[in-house]
Amino acid sequence: MTMSIEVRMIDLPDVSVNEVRRYAGIGGNDNRSDELMEIALAFSKKAKNTVVFGVFDVKCQGYKVDLGFSEVESRGLSRMLSECDKAIVMCATAGLDFDIAAKKYGRTSPALALLIGAVGSERIEALCDEFCREVSLQLDAKGFKLTPRFSPGYGDLPLEFQKEVFSALTPEKYIGVTLGESLMMTPIKSVTAIAGIRKKK
Image 1 (tube, rainbow, N blue to C red):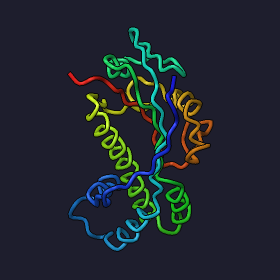
Image 2: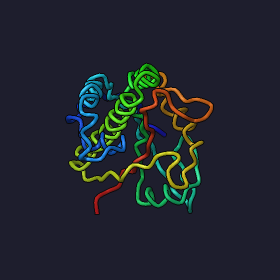
Image 3: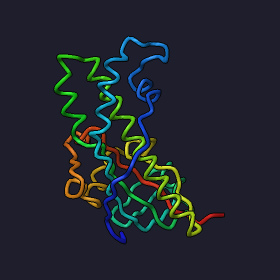
Image 4: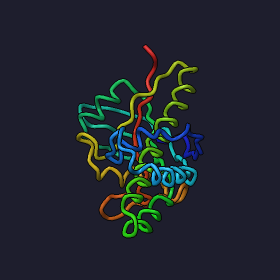
């Protein structure tokens, strides 16, 4: 079972404009949206950058993975966790402001709404990367290594496993992330993931 549920706020590096352009589908030489880009980048300051997570015991048998709070069958997740005794289960969010902006500008300025959404996508990915980097540094000092992260809906891990993650972490209580009937999260710029903890070889 879990040792504890923790909430962490993460300081992020500056926004990568190249990544924002990639998420928005804008070529590097396309400067038509520079003015809108500046407005969109300002929304990065509204990102909440919070993570709720727990450390859970792991047991793998064939393709079945037991995380203590639930079992799931996934070849990809089982392979990733095959050498792990524990795993971090996390839910991260960039906050609700990106959802509000998408509704506000969706009709009046679709191009701006697109760019703000791209900023949100860049921020949530940066948040997950930075959180895992910080955890990796802590584990490294203790002789452990963090695997890449694996999210419900990726590969053969069912999206329905979101329900089990929410039952275990209760992110609605800690960081205000809720799960709809369609298994989509609110705020939209939110991610759940699992990363294994294994001893260094």
